[in-house]
Length: 196
Image (cartoon, rainbow, N blue to C red; front, side, top):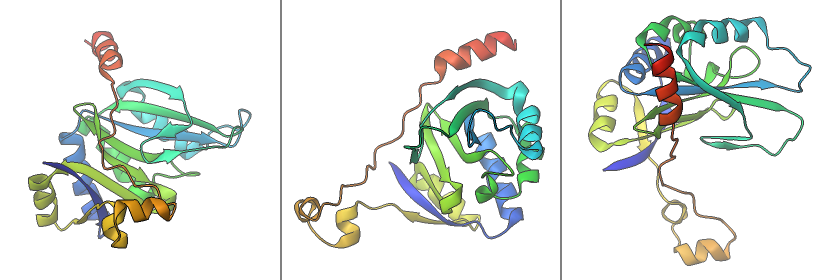
């Protein structure tokens, strides 16, 4: 059964590299968000280098105010999400970034996410040091056997120890434990035709 799990900890850069290798081999595509304070600001050199290295794997990109784990309200900032085909040849770029929460402005694109079967299987919000995975329990056990610390995400009412009704009375909305769907098939088909 698929469930959400928090990534409690990646111990070091070596474990991050092993985790990224696993994700690249066990996902269909990934995304990052290119942030600028406004249209006139250019991307930093380090961000441009990452963008250029990933360019041949790019499936699709668009300006947005929403991506897995994040909804923004600021109307002046520019957020451009880019989706890339998961390929082990991207590994050098991931290694240079050096950590899951290093995917953040100003030195890298923000909020690395991975997708499998059109669902987000890893979402991250780097500036909050927050990441979670939507995976089967046997996959969670496998990752834990590799030393990655995971914790099952529970509904708020269980966390607070109150009924769902009491939670609503307190004005706390229940968090969704539903999968985050991302239909990339039409863009992936175009990408595959272009690169075949």
